[in-house]
Image 1 (cartoon, rainbow, N blue to C red):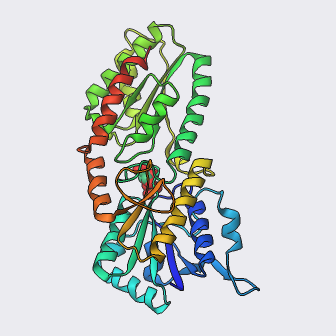
Image 2 (image 1 turned 120 degrees about the vertical axis):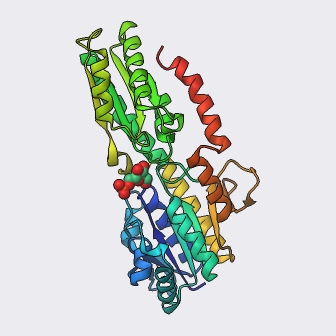
Image 3 (image 1 turned 90 degrees about the horizontal axis):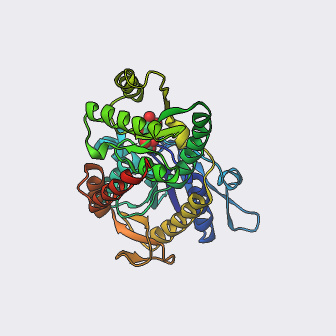
Length: 361
Ligand code: F6P
């Protein structure tokens, strides 16, 4: 392939730039040019691209210098978007037309569930060669142990909770901290153990608003009666009840017995999605990006590169931690992660039940 394209789509995640840089470098090493589609699928349909490689004076292909420098930064230098137009056939037809007109022979899609669904549709419908890379801080993609951005997001949450804990202990306060994760409570679960929170609230447990208020009140009651100066509850964004409402109702419930209890709400929001990628996200981004180029140039299509411990059953690549999975399998497993039927979710919930007994001690 003389030219391939790459795009970042959906919510950005730290590590996307490191991944783009690896794609550009590995492709350049094989003499292949890389066009970055601007703002995800939107750029494909509007014919907006940026060359991520360049002609070197010695006749070789090199990496775009700005991308070379941006590999360690958060966000994505080619922009990202959630595209409604690409879900419709005319949008995908236009994208194919533009790619062909530019002589692009393969496409790498870095993104989450919606982006990979678009990649699968495009590959199967048009026969165009498409390979996906899981990029989402939510960690809700099937066939991969982690996604680009998860490690950095967890580090950001841990840092924020450590800071909140400092001030909470100074004033003897309880905090409910909301962390991102639309359909998946992974960030909340993983961070709660790392910061020794007193409790974690996730959508997957299916608690009603009343039960949530009762659970938070119980944790605060026990925490303060056991002499704790900080009570920390991590709540996943996926829970529909607004965090401020949860805190207000809990305060009202506890008022008669703990009139001086101070309970505060902090919503971390998009802070969790920004920031320079951690070592792990740079490494994973680089290695997934490198294997995606190799797979595409070897003729792979309708596949995703997953990060796995060696040998869980995928087809091997040059990197033992990176394996190729068919996108339809990825999407089936993703759906099960989101609707809670996946054995992975059942295992996580069991683990969290064990943690729930010891976290408040
Ligand atoms: O990328 C995933 C995610 O960060 C979710 O955790 C969150 O619910 C959503 O994106 C927010 O999307 P937006 O930035 O479009 O509001």
